Length: 279
Length: 279
Image (cartoon, rainbow over all chains, first blue to last red; front, side, top):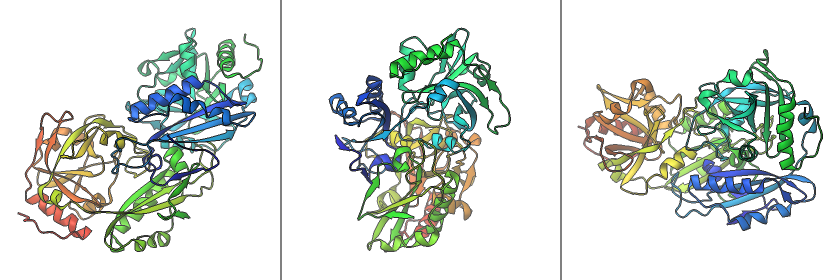
């Protein structure tokens, strides 16, 4: 495994990560050198590399990274590429993957935890590609184009629908809504990124998977409460959802007991300490 | 415009081209310092940058590149990225795009021009994403996964269908078939890369665009003749098309007058000199 840390932050121009987005990444919350949800991040990287057809670094090799972080809260960004070589799109056999990492200083946004966020519906529709769905791969132009749709800082995130207008995720977070007494998150078998926090919340029974055909947009917009979450930011309640033109507000939600309880579950996993009333 | 040539072939690890595939590329045939189809390559780069929302290099700046090539035939590979910066997926405003280029020695394959090629149907289906269709962007995992499906060198290319089983292109070439007295190539409004040679052949009236809904797989498989082409390799007649398992041959074609005439038209544009009978 070739590695390059932030002291030597250069990549060969021939790296297939640049040429084709032929690789994966992880963004890991690290607090005082201790990574959060680390098992899940390592497992997703390994699963992703398996699906793309090359080797992920050994677990022991990865385990040496987070401890290099300075004190405080940082995001450890790991990029794993198939390396250089091959003929055009054809991958080299065997590949010589490369791993790059950086520590990025990070401050969470407790006001979003507390007061929730406004979001909007993105115009861009996610394409359905089962071969890549769920992976945190380096082909992220859809996310970039969607995030480019708005500049208003009062809008925290954009909701992404697929080409059948079914809600999937936000540009950089997973989505959930509370409805019929439980929390639902869209299945990600055709598009979207399988967040590590999403995975743990499902494993703990706090979140159920909604089949996309059973989850049209109105089911989200008319739900009882709603939120966004990822393994770095934690969980943000959604209080309102604007349409793409920011003119209408097709969805509004209270910050109620169910969303506080899910937030509490998520933030306990992430070591985020704060106390809001949970009922 | 920041540039890096092959004498200094490194890229910042923070470049959005690596992080998100947030960029475009061109592969240009250069013969003794003279680029072929250069107007079309520059126009596509500019069109693509416009669609992604950043600036392409000025034409005069690009014009200085091909002359740096050594004697002989080379591929000038140009990668244009949005550069570094922004917050996560959110692009910086203004962006500071970067341009990287390399000259790669190239030898065309006259035996494929003469005798044609065998191809196969890929299992991977192209996702339909109108926001990215046509662009030669850096999100190419679909092409990589498709090209990874076979190792047999007797198979020159793989035919890519969309998720409705309509033929679109090959992994690195455009596709055409002859049928009802003319050459057809699939429209690329939902997926696929708009090749520069394709564009010129259409502009010259040698190739017509087939609406995907009017061009199901059997229309290609049962056509009178068929070929693949791009601005580097020229035009390869297709003589047979295997299924994904390489067991059956659902399509077979002669190398006939129509394919030789289209090849002649393409190769005249590219300065490829060879004489095959055209009828």
